[in-house]
Length: 194
Image (cartoon, rainbow, N blue to C red; front, side, top):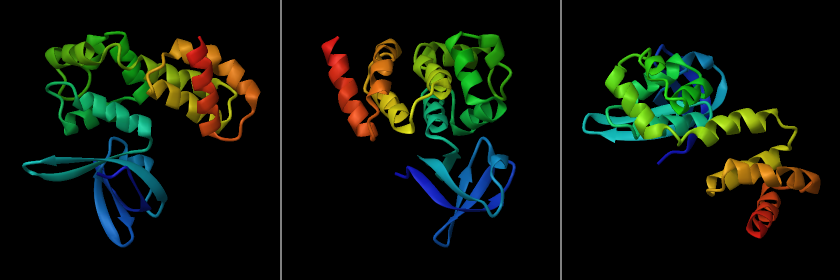
């Protein structure tokens, strides 16, 4: 229901923050609550989870972190609290790399994750996080405009492979367009030519 909340952080606790949005304080569970400071203005990406026991909000600093959280939730045996604990114990990129490389022993380090659950995480998510890991490494290091970066990520989200997007990146970078939308249109035209 919510994509993000923008407001002032009023409370920072070990497992949650409270963000004041228009006079309403939202309690948001976070894997990294101490990344925020009281009095700081922030945008927190939100996932709302409704259970029999109540409605809970989970918040993340980036959309990618939220996406990784949702992928962890898709694994049988991983609930929201376990997913948060896993994400709190490791940076998202290292976690995604460990899953991609099938490091079951490494994954058992996380709270509440035994060998069976770690194996299930690898089984369910291996091969599904490669673009996520490469995206963080690849596009962050390249000298591309924010608009081109957004366009490249959009092409990946549309289902094109990293290899296909990498092939057209130099051509798009030479175009010097002014909006992500223009880059996406030119990128699609290039990808459809093959």
